[in-house]
Amino acid sequence: MKLWGGRFSKDLSVETENFTETIDVDSRMVLYDIWGSQAHAIMLAHQQIISLDDLRQILTWLGKAKEDFLSGKLELKRELEDVHMNVETYLIEGAGREYGGKLHTARSRNDQVLVDARLYIREQILDTQELLCQLAKTFLEIAEAHVETVMPGYTHTQHAQPITLGFWATAYASMFLRDLKRLDAAYANVNTNPLGACALAGTSFPIERNLTTRLLGFDDIHEHALDVISSRDFITETLFALAQLMSNLSRLSEEIVYWSAYEFRMIAVDDAYASGSSIMPQKKNPCVAELIRGRTGRIYGALQELLINLKGLPMGYNRDLQEDKPPLWEAFDVVQACLSILKGMLATLEINEKRMAELVSANFATATELANFLVRERGLSFRKCHEIVGSIVGELSSSGLTFSNLQETQNLLKLKDIEISIPELKSILDPKFAVLNNKSRGGASPEEVKRMSTDLDKHLSRIEAKISQKRGQINVARELTDDVIEAALSRADIRAKIQEICLV
Ligand code: ARG
Image (cartoon, rainbow, N blue to C red):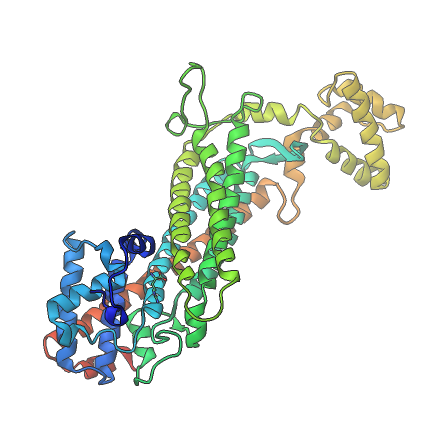
């Protein structure tokens, strides 16, 4: 008999049972379901909705459920549909219906599932942020080692201007900082307390939502009961933050793939992060980077899936909402695996500085610097200089030459009435020199890269501190709950205990 089976005259079909159950998805939320139930039971007793005797029975059996789950003895039963019914059934079987049957007073699975999900999701966000901080720091290490490693900067995948590998690396750290901020913003909307919204309308019992908010470590109450039950934007926001992050990881992967192609040869992925071909003995394929690129679609799909799910739903709980968790779970798994493996791959990346230097001098990357020189030193308008340098580049390249042919470049300039000595021309056209001079704020100069890198590092440390502060808040809440449980089970005065620790 189902716990909700009173109005039914027969069991649901096995097919329906299999169609509707969520055991695999819910298996990640068992401990959170127990914690939420402990907090709810404590609140019920504190508000004298259930007796202290009831509370002790309930807490005893919830404690056993936790122990059994941790030791692998509590196996979720599919026929019990979901984690909530499994935990409650365990409790009722242990404590008896007269006690265990009271836990679900003033609670619905509709608010319960949101408690479980939010408690799980907030930790997943913190785990993701932590991995992302580590990856960003790996980029800062690359930056530090390569503030002067000159390479071509690209626009349209064509040589544009010289940059350094350090400049490139700090760009990713700078991008990741925003990903971290987006995850932080998502966290704020995740970490609010849905418990007490009940089915959709609140309850006629005198519940105290502040107490469960404290016991579960939420920042605030998500107040409006109908809004609580109807909304999943805390999940879409989280999924968007993950989708955007994957977009950034995918672009990075794309660079790793083509930078390691023979035509570029700017980097080589460590053997530990590559794989071979079953037929072509010479192959070394950047499969990890390709798979990150390839898995990005799954995260976009996850976001789409939920957005589409939500757009047609009327207010209130609709069973469609059950579909909110699988895409998010998958997104966390994929993103965290990508972040973790990327960190290792980046840290072991072989960097071909010689090849970078060779490429940066090969294709007029310092043309803008030459034009800038003419503006600065010869008082011509930028447009005029652009035209002069453009025509020199045109002539040199049509005869198969580059700026390395200093004599020829000097001659062409002379034909335009511009005299520059060979040593001076040499330094103007030197990519290192060009980079050195880009001292504008946020520019590619080693000075700026060092400054930005220090700055980014400080930001990352601040975010790391915030992550551990949040973990601390979660642990404190867990301990508060445990303290009250201990007080209740040892027949101490739980009201005083709650007064003392929760200030409710
Ligand atoms: N498994 C459900 C979900 O994930 C839990 C809530 C069920 N509520 C209900 N009224 N059937 O959304």
